[in-house]
Amino acid sequence: MLSFQIDQHRFNCRAAAIIERDGMVLLHRVEGDDFWTLPGGRVEAGEDAAHTVEREMLEELGIAVTAGPLRCLVENFFEYQSQPNHELGLYFLAQPADPAQLQPGTGMLEGREGHLRLEFAWFTRQQLAQLVVLPGCLYDILLSGDDRFQHIVNRDAPGT
Image (cartoon, rainbow, N blue to C red; front, top):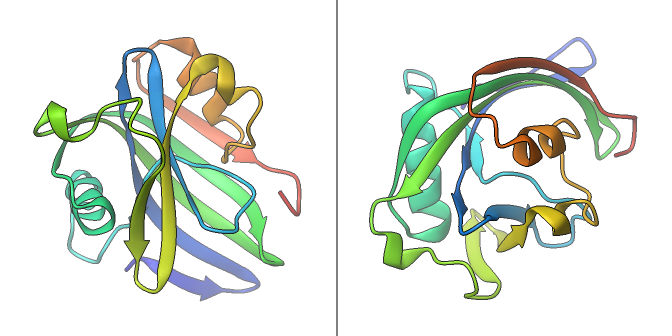
C-alpha cells in the first residue's frame, strides 16, 4: 500500500467512494473512532485509484461497486493517534453494481479491515452537521450537490 513514514509524517494515498442514494450518503468508521469518513482505503502500488475503491468495498463490505468520475482530490493534513499525517485523498462518485445490495434504511452495516471492525451507516445531509466527518472539507463537498471536480487543501486541527 502507498503508505510510509517520511520525516515525522505518515504519508498515505487513499481512494474513497462517494455513494449517495435517496438524499443519503454512506459513511464508515473504525469501531471506537469518534469520527466518520467516506469508505475506501489505501491505494496499492501499481493499482489505479478507481480500482482501489472497488476492491476496498468488496473486501470490507462484500459489495461490488463501480467507481465513476473523480469528484475531488484532497491534500489532507491531520493528526491521528498523535501521528502527523499527509494524505492524498482521491474521492470518486460510485454506485453499487447491484443497487438492491446497498440500500438506505438497512441500519448499521458491519465490515472488516483485517482485525478491525468497521461500521457503515447511511446519513441524510441534515445529519452530517451533527457528526464529526473527516476530512473536514467533506461537509462542503457532500452538501453542495455540485459534481464538478475540485482540488482542496485541508488542514484539520491537531487531535481531530
